[in-house]
Image (cartoon, rainbow, N blue to C red; front, side, top):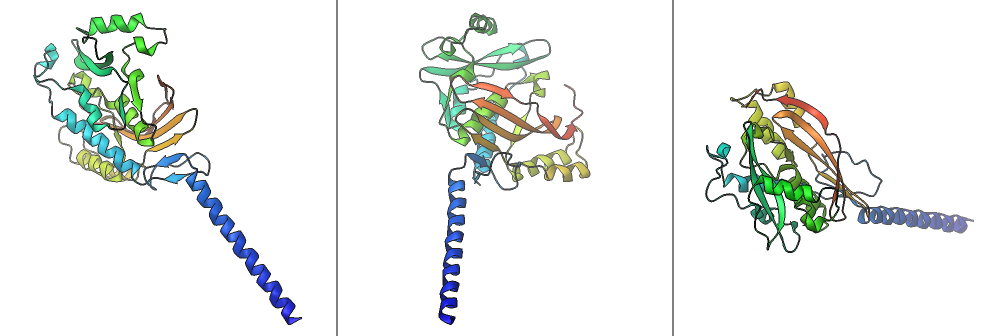
Length: 293
């Protein structure tokens, strides 16, 4: 009888061990098959299914891209003549953005270029794409004519809409770089009221704290209160990317001195040219610098 009880106990123990191993293997399989990527565990909450992968360096990598893009622009500062439509010499070589955003590129045979808009209220670049063999558009009027000629005609190879001619490598970081180019690609040579175009992504805790510190020490505009600084430091920072066969969903934090902190949601059809759906930005913490250009 004792021997029978001992055998029964061994069998129960073996069954428990087998079930535990199966649970571990199932969890590992779910993690390996996941298609949701986040920058770090303190980021925006995952709203998808249980198949999740924590990719701790995604936010860090994208923040390097964000900082690198604006550092590249800073090498080519504007001057007092831009409101007259006169750009510095040498002017900013816009194809240089792909040295920073290295997971995306222009379609073979195409280049990124820009014309410069000037009116009585401000001045700013307008990005466009053109075949490498085609001369740049002489001015904004010529570019608008080309845009109007292909309006309603879904033939990307004929149109200068620049985002139709950007190619991604399919990684989560490449789609974040694509979103960065769409959001901040034209934030250089901004004159007067065009400086309201300052929305910038934030992808790491360190970058958020740097923004908060700058706002607390603000002497030109309105300083951030201690209470709002504390709230801002608790905001989620990690970019979130979910890739499926039909869509790429992106969520990330942005900041503007004329609006504050927002959560941006974007859905992209990965087919080329891309179909974008920019969701209404979700306000997280308002801020107004009080500066009026």
